[in-house]
Image (cartoon, rainbow over all chains, first blue to last red; front, side, top):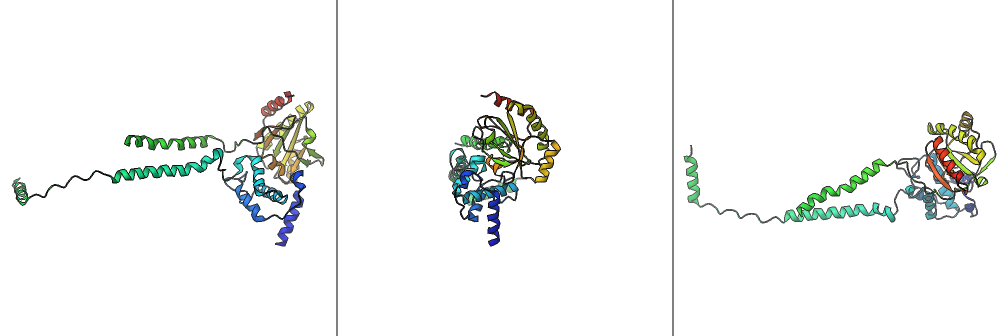
Length: 156
Length: 175
């Protein structure tokens, strides 16, 4: 664990400050869990359907280093995510934002389910409300059935 | 009611079909850069020759920033002669070409530069910070920056002579 922190510390020295503005803040302790949480929200730009947290690519590794460095410089997770959105657009977010045009992505599926449920309910109601079946014919009286039997037998 | 339902069910598939048609016809790599029209992020790197390369030092000139890598075959190999030729042809008119090598090794990058005889400044973006600052997805990507330091065009893929000439000429004619 101590070795890991030493490596991280060395890496942060080797990477140097991202921007002059960031360098002015004193370095803070960076929670790796927080780095991972932010990385899971970002799309790896050189991969197919992988987050920055999951990708083994060098680009994703560099992006994780940038996240770590920005957190160390005192930025909030929201500010770090905003930095990537500023550079890559909302495309970088694996989960589209729930506002503006992308809100449709969140609204359409439940709306479609609701409409579907409505149609199914309507059909069920219609099918179950069939007109009452025609009254069953009165039972034949024994004389009539006897007559039918006789006529059937009489046929060649 | 029954007639309405008969039309409603096939009609409900229409938006899905339109969405699918749109999705299949668009290029997933063609993502517009939010940096167009904005100030180009500044950077200072050390060139392979040992000299510092700074974007701000070239303010007032049209600057072409090209992100490349030696493993990026064939696109980077196709555009390298185009960039060198462009640099040779337009440098007298104040155009600056800067090559930034990303996700690469030093020896392979140096070999690439030597093989193509590149004479414009090239530097390695070792940490990848400059490429992230420019919202680079992959290589090659080329940014055309105007005299006031704004990104005017991002070209994804190998730069052609045509793209280089038309873009640079357009930016040079602007006051």
